Image (cartoon, rainbow, N blue to C red; front, side, top):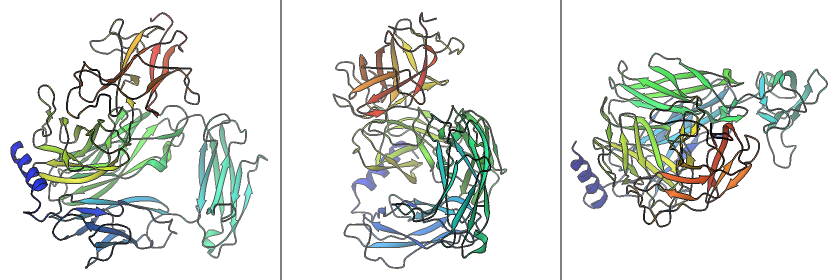
Length: 582
């Protein structure tokens, strides 16, 4: 479809709703997380309200990515309980047939579709935890003097129980806390603490007794690992959802692992469990997951990706994957697929931020488009648009699996905005993003801050890291460096999305400081005010910080650097600094 046709279609929908009934979906919740469910049991029924805030009538259908999860739409609108407004609500009843699920946490998806709604389809992520009394527990904590020196796990027996603790080495590092014994009524908890133990592995047990269910009355072996190495935060691993059409090629999603504590994560390999899946290492903390629909019929396919890494809990790290292959080739944004290009993490964004949107079917296979010429940036590339809160946003780049887009400066801080890709005139799914005043992120190259030494144009990297067309060597005290980043928020004077920043007047970011030195567990040794912080003249959405290195700045091949903009802190990255700049 031609660009003009896409724009005409959008304008027709947006400006003349009175001519064509256009329902608009409002959901009371996009995530559902019931209380933990005992093994062998079905979960309690859940309910979500759907309201039509537009014109016409809703005609909703539902689909699910898992056999244990289903949903049904009520036959008649009812009075809203959660949502407000003048329209009644359609109740969506979610059924959890979880009796056959093993202990663990599962996230799957309900899709609500209305062929007439202008913001259909929408998804509800359903996360259930199957938890009774575990047959074993393994914990990871840091040694004394580091964060995360304690950890705990909740257990859910059928009735009140007691727990008898044994460690075997005379050191009290393991404890049992019965339910309701604290000011805030927690479930039964088993906890561990470093207790001055040196790094190593320690074993103990907790014997549970008194439950009315015999299966609960067991001795639970407990392993405590005290480690300085990285520990992947498995609670932040969620199902990756990809979309495809039969014979429709490959879909790609990027997944970044968060760590609870310890040294830097280094992922060295990734392996997929299913023939339609493959995975590779993108950077030391991120993997690329690819699903291939070329030989698949319509349906939902499941697989897992495991990694090889230096994480102390590497064996426990698994990423579940759902691949939804549908006959209608509709662009789909992946779960956690809207990420910061500096960190590749799905996180809050600021007005004017640059984001990378990952998914698939954004463009025809084998094609790519970059915004031609000088700003202002176009809002259509090829046959693709990105709608943010329903309005087309400026685009930098479009390919089948990735779109780079700028968030409008007009978004309201504190709101949850929606992002939707329009490909070939057809709207895809919606994903939410949180909007904050500033979310500064420094750009990174090969693990180091993307910065230029203004004295000679070099990059302040160790000389051992080559970069085409640039000299690389450490900076020295007194040098002026230009750091580059995104997400610094609205400027003074105000910026407009898609439009190049001006050089006269300069457009300044809010109160900015730069911190040098310190470490993972210690604050910066120098915090200074930069010479300039704001938009880079002639660029769109790119921010720049010019700062003089302090005379007493920390030296080394990996000196930490971060910035704070309007009270919001950036990621921490490294630069190389030496006494003489060599």
